[in-house]
Each structure stands twice: as C-alpha cells, then as structure tokens.
Image (cartoon, rainbow, N blue to C red):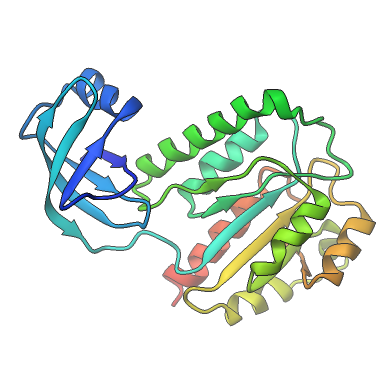
Length: 248
C-alpha cells in the first residue's frame, strides 16, 4: 500500500497536498474509496481511505491506526564530513532505509568541497526529497531531518544534547581497538540519542579528533578494515540495528 507523510492528522483526517497530491492523482491514478497509509510528523501511522479529491488537496479518513513500530529504539544522528560528488545523497538514501533519524553534514578540515550558502539551498531541498522518498520506500514512520552543513565549531555545540557520541576513527582501527563501539552499544537504552561523526574522504584531522574527544566523544574502530566515508555510516547503522532489533 502506498505511503505518504503529512504534517498532522486533523480530527481523524489526513490532508495531502503538493507533490504527493500529484503522485496520488496523476501517477497512481487513485480515486475516492482507494486506501493508502499516512504518517504524521510525530510518527503516528494509519490506513486511510480517500474521501475527497480537489485541485489542491486529497482528503483521506482514518480507517485503522497502525501500531507496529519500524523505528530503531534509539535516535541516531549521522554527522558526515562534507564529501565530494553525490556521496552524501547515497548516505542519506541508504542511511534512511537503515533507520537514521537525522543527517548533519559538516565542513571538516579535509573536506575538498567548498560549500556555497546561496547555491546550497537547492542541494538541501534535494537531500530532503531523497530522505522522504527513501522513508516511504522503506516503510519508515518518520522522515529524517536533514541539516544544512555546519562548521566544525557548530557541530561541537550541537553535540551537547546527545546521550552518546562516537567518532569513526581509522587510527583506532589501525591500533586494533575493537571494544569501544560494542561497549557503547551495550549501554544504550530505549529512547537514548546517539551522534556518530564520520570524516570526509581524507578522514578527520588529528586536531579535530582531539577536540571531539575533549567534548565527550569516544573514538571507535568500525572493524579491522578502513571504510570509505560513504560506507562507514551504513556499517554503524547496520550493526546497531542488528544489536538492538535482532540480537536481543
């Protein structure tokens, strides 16, 4: 059944507009009486039946609330050092499928890409669209939040509200460190928040790692192999999903 995200249910009614309206009417060729799934900004889900279609809106009434939960039981934010090309699009798409709640790009010392604030708005808009489509496809109940790229100091400030904070650091892997990530996973409780910082193609600078550690981050190995910047987020999300959703 097709899935759509809305702001809020209004008295047992979903109001669908914009691109989703076009998709329902022009692409899916739905009509009054057809059913779909709607999810609101709080993660509530319901099977709904279309009751009215106008030029501006589709109205759908709740038939049945959906209780099953498809979200990882902790809130996971991925902070990626701004990479080249479309790598961040890939991370957002696949990371959404794997359960990330938030993506926080940041400008690292070794980021090759120069962020242009004026042109960047269209990129952020595209990233949000990618996240929304991936959330629909993977039957998520929420769409991840996508931030405009932050400066490193802004990332440090932003990190203060998290319960757990880790750094994917290749030097830790080279030293043979293998217990920090698993140890942190074992401490996580339902509802905790986790921020994972991953460097760009050239990795994080040593000074960046030191500063992150000074602000409560744990330096972790993501296994004995050195992962690409677009692979590391998917590794940690997969490992976390297995640990919290399958192994328990």
